Length: 81
Image (tube, rainbow, N blue to C red; front, top):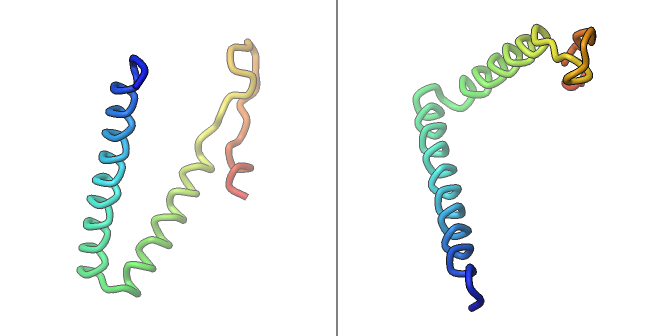
């Protein structure tokens, strides 16, 4: 292999392993919450959480024209629809 490929292959393999372990960990946690709440209650919990997250997005303002002086704050609500 050309010089530097060993490091790149090691980095790619490590990142893939971390991604798989991360997904597995979150899957275990969500599975435990589903068992604890039950499937229908989990659906309601996720629905309420999503509504709360969208409500918080409504409150966040993003300034248009980064770095420009006197820019009016723009609403982020248009990103949710």
